[in-house]
Image (cartoon, rainbow, N blue to C red):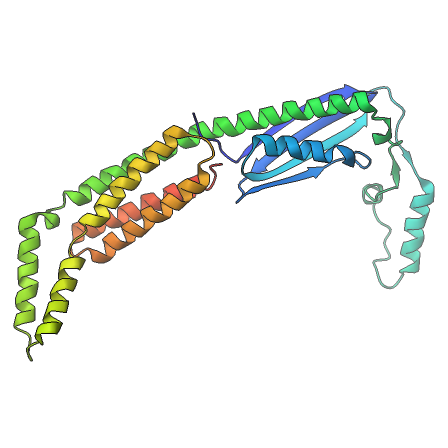
Length: 293
């Protein structure tokens, strides 16, 4: 099962009852599922059905759905409601001195609700035509889902490659010379010697605390083990597929936490370099999964 992206676009069109219709559905990233419908005046009654259909198939994303209606070819042209237009022009005269005196452009006037009489397009939609419109929307939604799946498949390839790079860097960090038992012992021995030679001499209790701190700070095996576990978990999620975006986002935070700790504990240039490289790849991974459903 593949993952799905939250980005996609789809369009369907057709004719019914002497009207041409066009559905457009687009989606972008979102923390949850937010559906916004833009329907012609008079067709608000199909809004619940549209929202229910989207909610049934999608889990996350900001989804915008638009339905446009127009008269089919050969239908009578639109007309201008001159009464409404006269009211708009009269209002401009009444507001003289408070707004620009220049007359508004024709295309701006026609955008004012009520000026352009579309002949009650929505009123011609009967029950049969409504079913045709909703079927057209279902087709648009299927295409949107397919577009999100195609983008998700490409995204999955990128994420798996990034996990592979995190795995490689983790292995490189684990094999760093500074983590070899002999090197760890030598470094700890030198640090202990410095504490013992401190002037004035440290109290035994303080000395024990410092030794414990040195031992904990120099050991990054726990961070490396957790990174390895996170890598396995990420691969399992990507193989599982489905709506895993939130879980991947949480896991990326855990990746980031371990890489930060690795860098803060590092006492070696090589290990620090690997830690910084890890942080860079993890940041890229986290950026990519913001688009996973």
